[in-house]
Image (cartoon, rainbow, N blue to C red; front, top):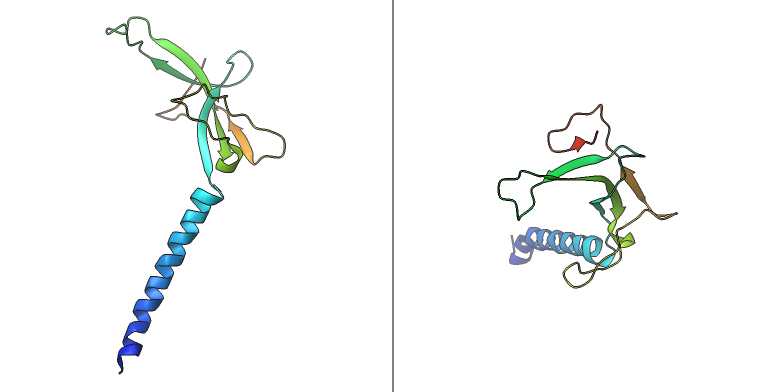
Amino acid sequence: MDKKSNNIPLVVLLSIIVLSVFAAYDRFFLTRNYDIYTQVSCDPQIEACYKTTNCPQDLPDCSKPETSYYKILRIKAYDLSYCNHNVQNCPEPICKTGEDCAYIKCDPNIKSGAQICGD
């Protein structure tokens, strides 16, 4: 066997790796074609919401926990606007007509350890 035929598997392997890296870069950085799940506000008076309880930082004994309600929004990354939460007050994402997104509301019949439905 000559040296050129020994390099064929290496060239094929390197080509596959380069194409895979480019495809991932295109999907995640250029076209942003992936789902993001984020918490958005929810009114427990009119819809089923998830519930979370947090202890305020100024109360170390957590005698008055703060309860907040939310629902989960699944939205494509390309439908979200760029916003730096450290610099500016960003608007809450919403589902607009024609976008590939959905609100995931709490189902009280499904018991999940991490997510608790509100009352």
